[in-house]
Length: 309
Ligand code: NDP
Ligand code: OXD
Image 1 (cartoon, rainbow, N blue to C red):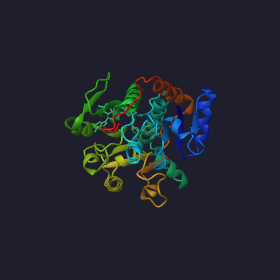
Image 2: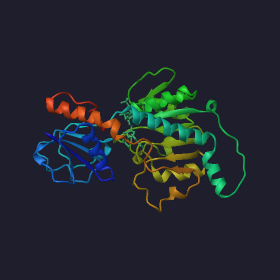
Image 3: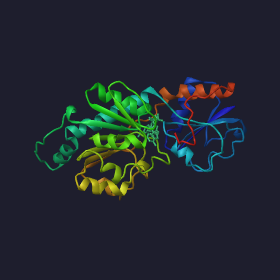
Image 4: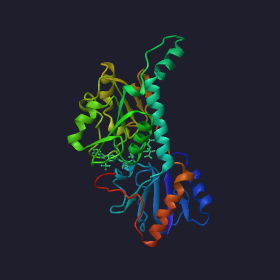
């Protein structure tokens, strides 16, 4: 049995080195070096090239290097029926909370406008918002959403959540399903999307949902670009229904240089960096699953391919 690592973002060597630093005897290979294809039982992937999961006759598990698995499920050339697992990691959750807090406070205190004023040498005090003014709605109240919700709630924000199933978290009302969606949206003045990208959630951030938010609401999308109907965002900003948007993820990444989002003064763009799997922190759980595979034990953090998360 052995592991193959498949990613093309320049971090392959760092991941392989971290595996070997922590587990010197581990049979782990990069996909772009010669490797014994028959021995590979686990493929760990991030935005892998199409077709790269073919030709491993003894593959028993496909693992995402990150929390999301949408890119694995959309690869129709992957071998069918093989369990898929993902990362659940405290550092990933903390990093996500830190990113979201930065975006929320930047919005409250007009930091984007001041950055633009600075380049125009413009001294222009603006009214600022306060924690007490806002209800933060978190769409997708799972591992990351609930962690972010706790962090905001501890700072005094009114936080509400939305998930598929009912949930309870102290001090936070969590709505669920279609029946809970309207009230959740109507109460929200800052919307954070932390849903997985599935057949049900694709395009969920569209005119008919975003129009139900409090007027002048702020949107933070840190989930996937496919959640946002990108063509519908700018009209909502231009009418004032949304006061701004902070987007970390896009339909096409990198965001094409001629995309209208780049030039819009009320859209803040970051290059899919809200929270990034840290090899030091994540490698032990990946190896734990490899050991479980070796022993025929149940895997950690397995997703349901039918649900898509
Ligand atoms: P989880 O699977 O732990 O949580 C998903 C949540 O979404 C759950 O609460 C689930 O409900 C809810 N949900 C799923 N489908 C629906 C639906 N149709 N209607 C309502 N609620 C729904 O995922 P994580 O929190 O770990 O991660 C969320 C996403 O964040 C990832 O899939 C990934 O795309 C993105 N991400 C982005 C990063 C970045 O850097 N930008 C970094 C890491 C992750 P229930 O609890 O009832 O099942
Ligand atoms: C993830 C991501 O899914 O970084 O982990 O987007």
